[in-house]
Image 1 (cartoon, helix red, strand yellow):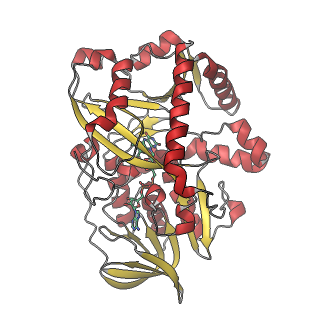
Image 2: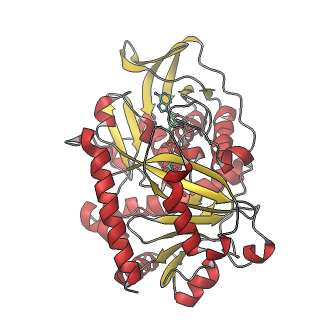
Image 3: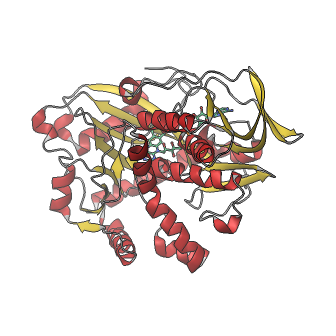
Length: 435
Ligand SMILES: Cc1cc2nc3c(=O)[nH]c(=O)nc-3n(C[C@H](O)[C@H](O)[C@H](O)COP(=O)(O)OP(=O)(O)OC[C@H]3O[C@@H](n4cnc5c(N)ncnc54)[C@H](O)[C@@H]3O)c2cc1C
């Protein structure tokens, strides 16, 4: 297992790193260069923005501190999930019918963009679209889930409510009392998808530079200057796509973000008999707990399960004990299976559960805050950021650009998050026991 994984430029020792398609060549930035659009960060947001801007004819260069897909993009659960955490009726109530409907449509079609890009560029990432299951952990969550299904069906999406036996048959666990099947969702190997997007961006004409951390972004004649240890980019416009890994690059942005850590474990390939019972039809799942669990079966028959974890400078197996316990509770028949991989990554959660495009200054934007749903949402937001750089006005975008809002007491977020997570876990456990 990697130690101090958060700081190393090496990929974590994850299942995805071990099985991904080859990485494209992305030499470090060298010397000084001027471009129309400079992108900082090579996750789904930055890669999609670079691809879409280059496709539209812009001269684009992207700098990435490590390699494309090093961050959350190459570490996640691979679940392609439609919709924001907020339901369609809430969005229309909060943002008005017109803007709300555009936000709903944006969140509903984000998975389409992912699968279209995969098909268009022949990205080899094992993509499948059998649907995403949102499994209900306790009675209190059931009416909310039924209402969610009603809201989406009223907007033409073919979601279905499943009962206890149906959910048990599709997930292979009796942990849940019901669930929703959303056929718009699916799965992909996330690091392979990131690498495929990087290749698509390069083919569209973008230059991608790995091992090129932006150390400074500042105003400059003609736009902005992005400084890295081995060269600089002067760009008319800049997109900061560093999300949960923003650190000190743009302090007001960092102080507006709440990064949390998510952990995953992967079993050894399971015996055919188990594979025929656990998610036998290729669905992926997550649950309605406040501190969620998410799970999928990989093409080689490994069961992968993830959930919230505690960030520590040094990783150790003990930090994963609660994830392993959840795996064995949901799927007791895997308790004899060897666990081959343990890894973690950072995601940003936002107080209103919505992603954010921020206008940081004239000609400079950031995008992020996908609340654990970034496979589809970051890819789609990258496309929006490319439109911002191409001159689209705020009212043309489904997600209106905002200003970063630094959070008070940001320095105390780690103990505050620990307390909140502990409390939420307790509520989840009570609810699950009162089924
Ligand atoms: C364990 C885990 C499980 C998840 N599971 C799912 C899931 O199943 N489904 C789902 O939809 N979402 C999931 N997510 C969330 C999803 O992965 C993220 O929302 C998404 O990857 C965000 O993409 P991004 O491009 O915005 O950020 P990232 O992928 O984190 O990319 C940011 C990049 O910026 C780079 N960077 C940072 N600072 C600098 C700098 N100064 N200079 C240059 N580069 C810099 C980093 O190296 C990094 O590569 C999960 C996340 C994690 C961590």
